[in-house]
Length: 194
Image 1 (cartoon, rainbow, N blue to C red):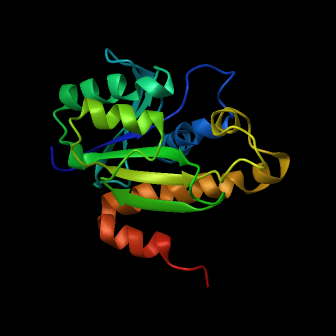
Image 2: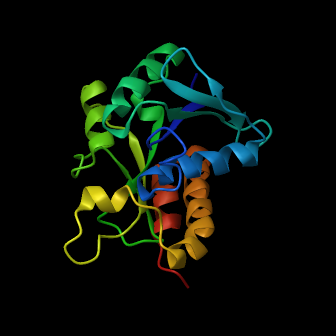
């Protein structure tokens, strides 16, 4: 199944969380599904799943939106990897990142969780096997606002103006990883704007 990738978009379930910063990973999944003309349906694992191809004849993407809360993301992602027999080096996790400025996307493989509970749980559930991350910058909370409160709030009205392009950039990054490999995708995504 070398041409199959699992793309997990992290977030919390339910409409009350849908527009939160913490759910930007699931926003990116929705964009990818729309591009592929794919629809999400319930899976036997705790995920909503959609499948499609980046382009005709291209790699197959299995998009997974965990139906667990963020801090239990590993409980959703790990059994789906097993069910599909996909190795962790073919797992791409899309998630919010406080340590990256808003409207910025960064790519990496492996590493620590950086305080992100969803990533922490996936690392634990996959026995720390490295996987690729599409880190979508949501910026730091203003003033003394608690980080946990900040990520559970919706994007500001100013941020919402740029949010569609941020989500699109992150979806482009996923497609680039699958089509061109991580290093080439990093060179493209991390290059300074002209």
